[in-house]
Image 1 (cartoon, rainbow, N blue to C red):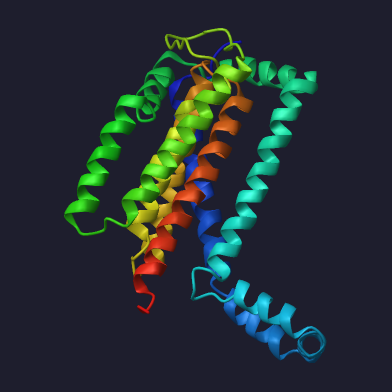
Image 2: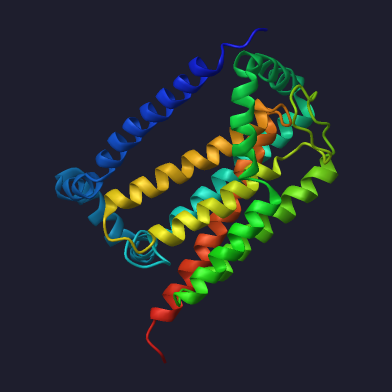
Length: 288
């Protein structure tokens, strides 16, 4: 299959990123209205009466629910959302792993998708994604992590360091254990890129999610302006996805390898968030 060429591919990629930026911005603004919507629902007679009946009939249950959705305390809504998202990621990962062992369609789909990427494998496009994939390499991520720890220490934000280390260590342990336990073979090397460890899951995708995701969180956690938080998180997510995509475009990973890497990295990233928020909550809690 002949490549589309350098400029059509790059212009399409830029257009895709711009389109996602517009859509994400619209969704972000829509989420800004959620407190008003919740407040409005609380004033609607039906839900209000239903909640009053629940509180009267099940006072302990209703108090537990209130504590779980209290937005300004870490043991409330933040921890609840983290737990729900972690369970969801575990379910997705379990389903993907089951399909890998039991469903030949996943393997066929991976191979078909890898073949279809020949359409964008122009030599100059491969050079660009070769540079991008280097941002998810072990040496780069170790260097960036050490620099980040140094900055956190220098600025007195040491409570973020255990969370960063947990995200990195947990995600890498699971990834490399999975690689050698599952021992999936790599796709055929069709470009200049090569790799010699087993294929599933992608360590580049895992590492990019854990490291860049946590750095974005550490920077954005105390930003007062929501528009700056949005820009930080959107472009950090774009970087993570580009690193993940580079592994498929360079034909060193299947799509399911990359998806599994993002799920593993996402799970341990949430664990790092939870540990950091717990330490911050404990530090602010009154003594005695």
